[in-house]
Length: 173
Image 1 (tube, rainbow, N blue to C red):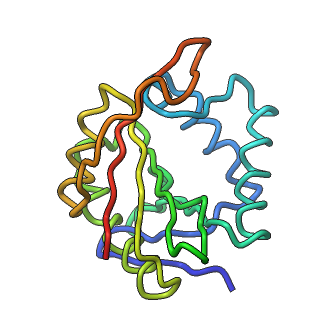
Image 2 (cartoon, rainbow, N blue to C red):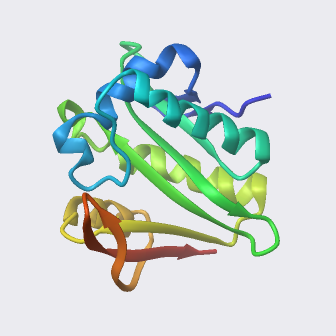
């Protein structure tokens, strides 16, 4: 059974095939993808991301949730983990919000329940987050949740044909 997580204002639910339009809305928004490693330019191409979510669950290497406002039923973003390694007891966390919901304390509320799930249910010792250089908002959110900035991975990935550097944050139990 898929783990639903609940906070005071939000419920984290499984991303289902009928959420593809919502995922496209987020991962095609110029503000969201500015510092995000995945983007799509058509609804059809977003199917690749939907398959990614399914593969994580099927292979046991991660889980992603849509973040849903409990009062309105609005989908506001997504949060999840991947690269889960049972042998090393570690996972990588990621997230995004639609810009209309930025600054509302959503991550301050949902990040702790995801961290608790990873640590309590899966025995994760180390949670990593890779944040693109320049994304100070995300870095602040992670620090508020107890993550430590461990350093800068220079020219770590290629995005839009150019090397980008990523900040490594980690939370160790």
